[in-house]
Amino acid sequence: MDAKSNDLSCSINDLPYELISYIFYLARLNDPYRLGVPVELASVCSHWRRTALNTPRLWSAQEFPFSETNTLEIPLNRLFLERSAPLPVRVRLVGVNNAFATLLLHTPQRWKSLMLFPGAADAKSFCAFLASIPPHNLESLESVTVQYLEMTAEQYSDVSFVSHLPPIPWAQLTRLSLTHVSAQDCIDLLGRSERLVSAEFYAREWSESWSEIESQRTFVLEHMDKLVIYLWIFPESQGFNSLLCSFTFPALKTLSLAYFFEENDFERCIVADIIPFLIRTPTLECLRLANHVSSDEIQRILRYAPGLTELQSRLGGGNEELDNLFQALCYEPGTSAPPLAPQLKVLRLWHIGSHVDEKILAKMIRSRWWSDGELDELPRPLCVARWKRIELEHTFAHSFSREFESEMDIYRSQGLVM
Image (cartoon, rainbow, N blue to C red; front, side):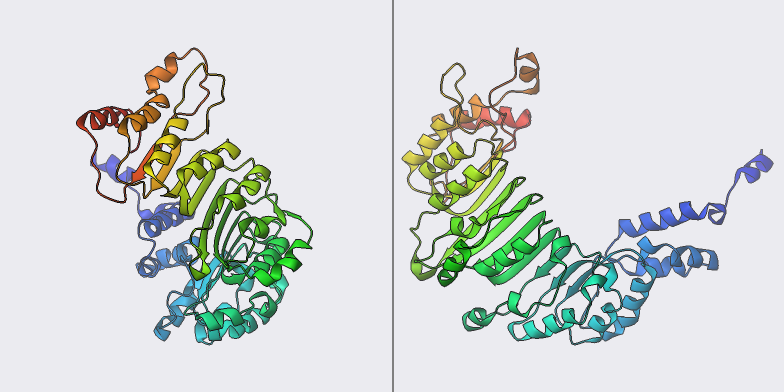
């Protein structure tokens, strides 16, 4: 019996290279932020060392460089860069006048993601750094993020990101994130980046540029799936719709929008800017608004975006308007009028006030909720979607009745997230 057991025993070093390599990779995945794992594995024995050094994904870091303050890590960065070849790398730089940036200049053909975080005074240095790289060497680049740090209002007005920008293969990018850019910069870069899937802009709307914007042709971004816009607006500016009037997004599913008003222009209605865009974008499924929107305005949005499955917004207006919204969302089978927001599954509302009519709220939830068993027994498909998640955040402390909470507990037990 012992002899047979010895015959069946197997050293880990007898395993195929591919299997040992995969085990090493799993060990790295178990603790991806501990950079010492590959070095420790390579230090066990000569066989493990050869295996580790020839397993590129074992040396693939979350970002390069690991640190821009500790020069002692330069050799470690070099080791990881060399051994992770030919895999793509994610580059993150806060400064470019250092040995880490010089080290990365040897691998631009492997850059998949480029994240730059310059101070206001460093913008030209970063552009010069990029200009030293031939555009054809950025063949793997898919994502660009530029976020200016410590920007004052005066410096902000002097920054023209596009005017200092060296040639970058915008047409091959799939993701783009920029801060402190003008509305014109947004349009310029979106127009160049025809393959974008996701874009985020933290922009200032310069009203004097709209005459140029309106004269431009319309661009079609066929692959855009997610768009995030944070926009600083002057009172005389024309708003969100003016920014996007130059674009069509046939595949857009998620839109996140936040307005920041200059000169305390807080009462400006943003719905009038949003609705024309909703009409042109029937594929939209998720709308997230960071500004205060009244309950009546939310009803208007839902009427023009029947395909929405998720809506998030901060609320303005009174409790009566909110009760009207909940009443409008009640599904009543057999009525001739089409239901409001028939595909809506997720509703997140903040600042809803302290006096909510819980009977109307319970009716709204009840009218669009069925347990799995009830859905199976229905003779035909429903005209509305079943709730998936409802979040209501009160401005002041609010407590519901025991009857209301008991009914909601039943729905929670059946899968509703509240």
